[in-house]
Image (cartoon, rainbow, N blue to C red):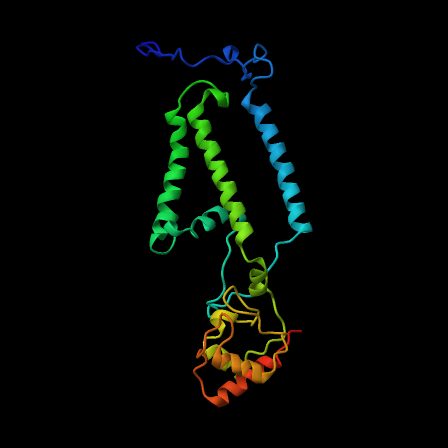
Length: 255
């Protein structure tokens, strides 16, 4: 009996021999000059270079112009009006209109944006033409132009109608206000903080009280009888508390 008798060797023709394997060479796009190129490494390398330049430029911008900081968040300051970043200003403005705010907040926050972004998502499926020119794709072009125009208009309206002076005052970092004295505790207990802010810098609903030089008698009179937008009878404390509050506000100065 010979060794190996009865054994069979089976080969797979799908596996190429090393001598028959071809190197991975990108497809030749020379017949389409200026229209397309190989994704790897040509296109991807360009994308990385552009991304790196943008990132370095953005980091240099943040170092040269750091983001402005506001004072520490105060949960007791109900008069603070937050403002979203610029890319959400159009939604912020939308919520100011009659049928998108108040009892209709769900409409302004969910329904209208949902329909708008849903239409943008469906635009490529509605207009499925092979043309790439905007004039040849009226539905998709109309959706996009309407979206861009709406975003620009709402953003502009939000910037133009916002009270930037009040926003600057309410977020300003103020040093030197002593909050441990009895005058400030009375100010906080009477709810004045809701309109004039925790740092007495004023808000969109109340005037600035610090650095005004109001006489104590004037402060006491306004607290009891009101003045302009401030109604009468807001102060509910005793005469002694009113005296301490008015003296505190009249001598209050920032450093």
